[in-house]
Image 1 (cartoon, rainbow, N blue to C red):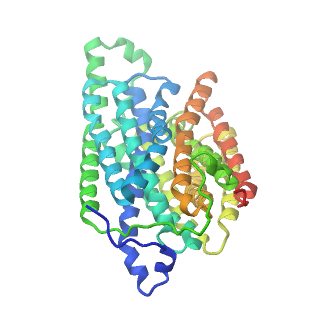
Image 2 (cartoon, rainbow, N blue to C red):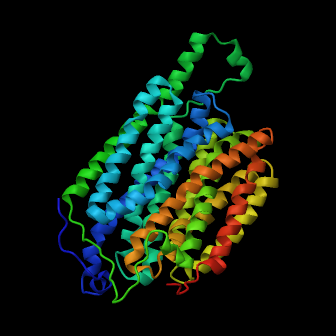
Image 3 (cartoon, rainbow, N blue to C red):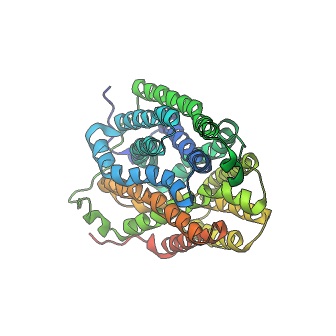
Length: 433
């Protein structure tokens, strides 16, 4: 279905009478995508402890769940940018939704065979779909109106990502986690047939949730196919320099945004990946209660997104980013050196203060890129590979420290220090081309 009504200058269009209403429905549809990929990522915090149990994995092996989905961002970021240039935002979104759905449906054969490698492949496919969606939706939301309000607009859309992060642990805890955990001694005493039946039952718990998710994705893709979306095209200025894929990094603020985004996504995934296990080990919570607290973390993340959208009306985006980084560093120290339920409260607080970081870094990185926005967006999405690398490093550190999960939180602490530098210095736009 071809998109018509090309808008050459969205900033001029946004100033026309009634333009707010014209962009309302497209913005709502784009916001729904933020919710859907938030649901996918929100379930990762449940999948890691669940498949660790069902597939008998150690800490570093369990983080391959993160590696599979986030490595796809690195692999697909460049193709995603090319896809957008070739077929436009709308058709790219439909493509992303269908690839995402295919990955969700692959959970069925993976569960039936209790094959961890097939789970990883399914997650990689999901990650490919998410890459196309995020490369399309983030810049589309950013340019769907005046440039000076792009951070506010992205944070508002991303607030519904936070809503999904809130709901996913509750749903995952209810429909995926069984609450049944056997000690090593009990496992040794089991017959081989009982073990196989137990692992198969645990693995099969993921089938229904992912079948439902895949079906919803297909339905949303159909809605997008039949809906009209304005084709947003960034305005070009005469004699504007158009660097290639790598030379665009000469925009120093984009380069620092890529670095900051790498460490932000790594930090976020590190915090959530080991949330359930640290809640069980250090706070003495059972599996389902730990999942409940992960849902509270998600709720605080969502509240942070909505409140951050409000605060950005009064505080410069880079200032708020820097303040939140300082607080997150302090809360990481509590998670490392604290004890009992205080650790869980600290991690919940990190969820609140991390909430604005991704969309704020994204929008600051795209400032002034004009017709290079798609290329810059590809780099920023590619930097999400931090979610593949840093959690594995954290899992390896925890294994080296003899399952000392608290020690692993030094990694997100370092991440927040690097993001702080971006908020204070790295975000500044310099004319380098």
